[in-house]
Image 1 (cartoon, rainbow, N blue to C red):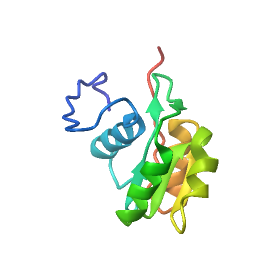
Image 2 (image 1 turned 90 degrees about the horizontal axis):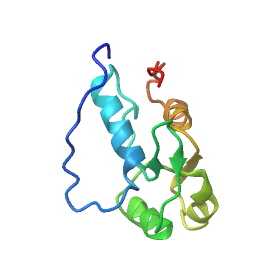
Image 3 (image 1 turned 60 degrees about the vertical axis):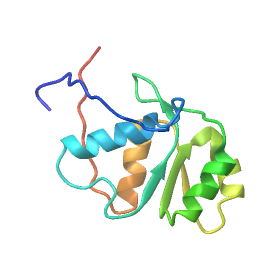
Length: 123
């Protein structure tokens, strides 16, 4: 990680909007750091992410919960602002609300993932 910044080109296919920001961020971190963030779990996430690592709200949480449940996801990370609606429709799906990238990394670590001590450059 000494060679920051790094340009990343992502082909999101049919994904529209910015609700995949958290998922893309976690995927990139998983690729460029040692270990496995998910600990072998099937994890889904949704949420925007800003330059400071804050996770923001998204639309369509009920549909996203249904899709995650149908796909057999073990853990679904959602913006904390969407947590009540997500849990209301989650059935047996384990749903956690996150406000920041650090929250998401901590949630993954609690579920068996390898935690990361990330030092991000200032400014």
